[in-house]
Amino acid sequence: MKKRSAVIKRKTKETQISVELLIGGQGRSKIDTGIGILDHMLELFSFHGLFNLNILAKGDLRVDIHHTNEDIGIVLGDAFKKALGDKSGIKRFGSISVPMEDVVANVVVDISGRGFFNGIKAVVSKLPKIQKDQGYSFEYANHFFEAFAKRLGMNLDISISSLNSDLHTNLEPIFKGLGIALDQATGIDPRRKGIPSTKGVID
Image (cartoon, rainbow, N blue to C red):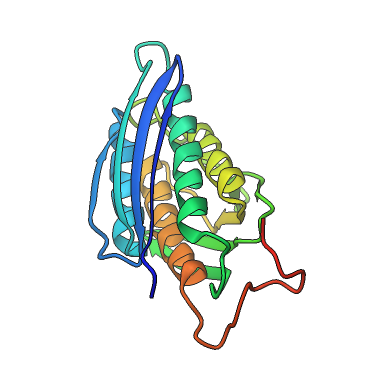
């Protein structure tokens, strides 16, 4: 099978980011974004999705982590889109439920060419106060996922059945689940001849 890989570099006045991606790898990663918790989450994403992933990012963290966090999502989405090419033969859909302590994350993806993400949904009646971790928050995670989904052209749905007061405990099963669901969606179905859309194209 053809090697599905990409190298993407993006430089703005606010950030300088490079991503090297291999789909269908061994889950090896080298991540340095300057945002410690995001590094860890992307390592989990890479490991459980079996993507070989190197990310190096330098940004204006002294001002805010917003630009770096969002731009990493943009470049990662571009890398997946390039590595997948015309998407011929892929399964396209993926879904998984991943537990961690009292949290169960449900992640569903469709590589449809139509990027959509509407925020992490919490199916709970009472919201605990969630502390930030190294300045990171659910809001930043939402910005990352939105940028990633839109640039890849992926319909992404994330929900969690309960919320833990520890941000790390909430985000870890989400990133693990995203890796697993994307591994499913980017996997090749030997029965599929061509692009998995009745339109005959996935933009």
